[in-house]
Image 1 (cartoon, rainbow, N blue to C red):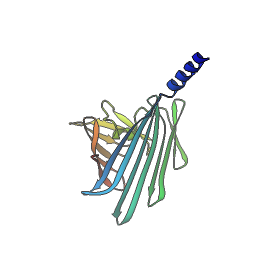
Image 2 (cartoon, helix red, strand yellow):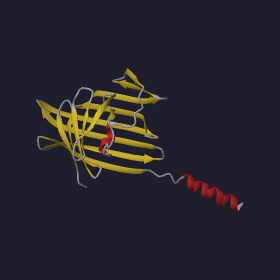
Image 3 (cartoon, rainbow, N blue to C red):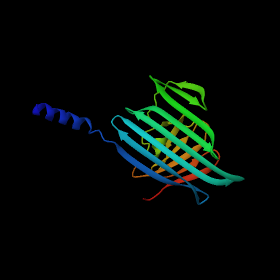
Image 4 (tube, rainbow, N blue to C red):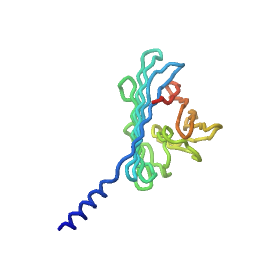
Length: 198
């Protein structure tokens, strides 16, 4: 009886040792030298899954006051994208929604609640990962927002240019593997993100 209890206890303890590892990043959004918003990103690793979340809030004036919110939830399982959800709102009204869901070896992309397309190529890298990892030896990443692949080109001094399907360019700057700054062409507005020193 005691042996059964000890074996059961060991199994229970070993079964609950899978803890999660969490990493949080904070960035300022800067436009023309002025902080106009913030970007918060979180990466949680648990067993074979990695969960990414990012939330960007921008408040500025372009002819009139404008508030833009970007929310990303991205899940990788065994190094492959499993699902991603992107919601963008402008002045608290929905502007764009994109859902990418793995189905076997394909990906089903739904944009603004309408079927967009099926992607046949495996997705190993996504845009949200650029906040957490320097994209060494990576030539493309998946845009969770657009449902398309972006090209990544290495520049000098740990800088990388990301070019989207419309030809817009963002540049990411890293130091010791950590993102320090990026220049972003957000469509409505061009801005920089700079890492906050905690």
